[in-house]
Length: 244
Ligand SMILES: [Cu+2]
Image 1 (cartoon, rainbow, N blue to C red):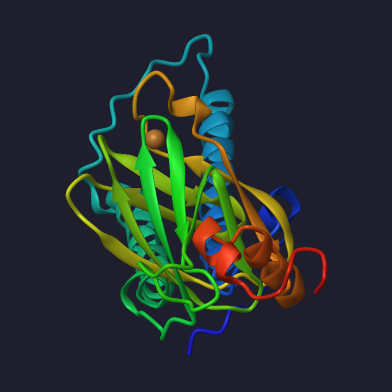
Image 2: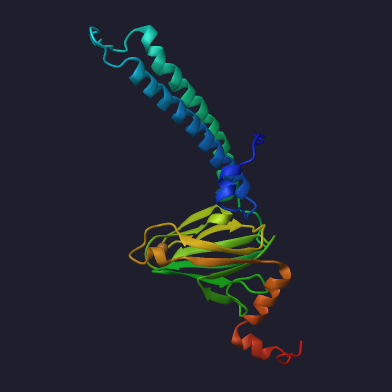
């Protein structure tokens, strides 16, 4: 149902896409882009053409048009119908994507707890057992490490004021609200290092809330988890350092 008929090349040329739902978001974004720009250029063009075509001329008296005649009303009602048709079209595409990204919650393969605070992001990674609040959790500030092709649930909250967890390459934006834990999901599809932002004005340090997300392949991610294992676990490890 509602298969897109074009490739979203404008937004792709600006921001790379690195999550499973980025493609869906980009299609809606670009659909809205083309619809609104088509009508903007058309109406602006007609407006300036009319300005020029009916400009002040010697010996010609200005006429007051009320727009009440049937022959005049169609210039209002026909574009209005067009707006409604395109509105419905955008809503149909958007609702489907909204459901997939925000309302549906596919089963988690790993988890991360994300807390926004003035002015940093704290990431509690689930560690090798993929479960939060266990001894192998790895907590980092402004550094989120995830594995490609693994579906994550995040538990997002704020420690002080409103923040917004934004990962442009995922096309993910979610408000973080004090006193509330919001669960959502993402699945990275590309390795690399990308930016994480706060997309909600949260005080004078708002602009400093830039963190990094590191999307690693399975091997790199396992190595990172091992290197960053909590001290207690690292000491319990029977393998002496440097002998693995
Ligand atoms: Cu913030």
